[in-house]
Image (tube, rainbow, N blue to C red):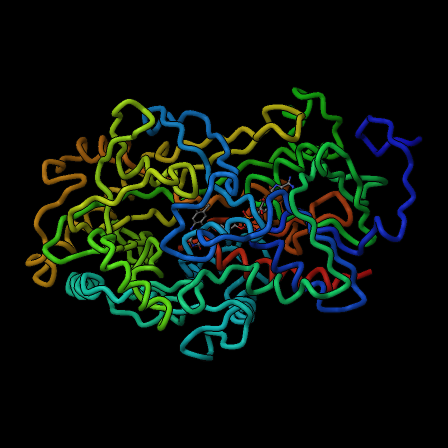
Length: 570
Ligand SMILES: Cc1cc2nc3c(=O)[nH]c(=O)nc-3n(C[C@H](O)[C@H](O)[C@H](O)COP(=O)(O)OP(=O)(O)OC[C@H]3O[C@@H](n4cnc5c(N)ncnc54)[C@H](O)[C@@H]3O)c2cc1C
């Protein structure tokens, strides 16, 4: 019997048998984990184990974009979040995929890289190699873009990316209106320049979700050197002599150990990775002491610095038919045919048909706001389970990803929605523990609009939306503004609306931030500072949140991370 360093509990010495040990043990088969598993197992001599808490990514709701709201709640962690005082005490849960592919199997498929200046800022913060020239080859390597190859885009990578195939007249009108309001029309906001308005890009193939499972994992699963185990909860990383030697995990009611000959790679996401580090004794001593977890490494910044994109929607009633009217049986048949024969139409719809990146703030020179347009809208509906409580659009959005499955109803009127997103929020949240029991969800605290500058920035973005809807191009189509409504004009009224309706896009980052200073959890090669053979590779390592949706940047991080792991092979 011997003790694993610092972990205090006597455990039987287990000599790694050939079938208990792999070169790399990847924790979390989500966005980053599937990319890593695919890339690291390309060499037949490298043995890789991927451990995922959720099940296989199966079912129509995973594959068919328009069914994303019908995903069952058991594929979603729905992590509880502490009451948000900046939103009147609301407790909207945090959605994240608990399924093979992680949030890549449950997200809304919007494909955005962010602004190249985001990555130059990472480099300026000390993350050598992560500037625009260091990340661009990995964005290109990952993707197969429908327009083909150019100096910015990739054409031969595993993940299929193209423009939305919904083809809606209101989308074209919105783009024309945004151009009239002064935004450059952009063919490709993931190319040389980001600023402007364009059709949304999505990771889809033949109109179906093309997730990291389809793109990176499925082709690798026939390899004998890759083992994928689903429905297992990793409970901690085992550290011995200052280096990670493996992980402990639960399979049903049994506890097992997987040894890593070379490295343990944490890819459990911006909530899961810091939680696992803390359960393993790596984190803020005050948290570990409170729960009686023996300290392995004093690292106060684990779980801190959580960043998220605050968002709010404006909903307009319009004169044209929108997707709200497409749910009649006859129209559904038409859309089904368009989908089956051309991979186009309403069935391929995600939550964005057009996207704009712009500077809404008075002094900003880089895009500080994203607008997401969709020819569809929700209005207040009755919640059948809560005695006539009215559910507003933002509550439904907060539940996106499962909880409201079966209860979402499109409003019968023709509506369009534009969501304004604050790209560079100042507010910070944190992930901590509630218990040393690994099955207990972590504690998440975040005041989405706790910083007055973020509230102001969200209002600026919403005011731009109103300006776009007051252009010559759009005015003839607008019946009225449904949300927040024409009465909301003063700063005070906007403040009230935003506190009542703002929501997060589930883009959490930076809880194990990369850097060089004492506050960094991982170094620029994604190695946990102070522990050998342990890296974090997922959205949690981003030093700052990028100017756009976070799926593509996470894939880029895993692509680059896989090269680092292979280059550093002992
Ligand atoms: C509803 C929703 C919509 C979104 N829409 C978009 C969008 O349209 N475009 C976009 O770019 N981004 C979007 N995002 C964000 C984007 O999907 C994420 O930022 C990205 O996928 C994060 O990747 P990750 O690898 O860090 O984490 P994840 O993909 O979440 O992977 C983490 C994995 O680890 C597993 N795991 C966690 N803990 C354990 C444990 N203890 N043991 C075993 N396994 C564990 C999880 O089950 C999961 O599979 C959305 C997210 C959500 C939730």
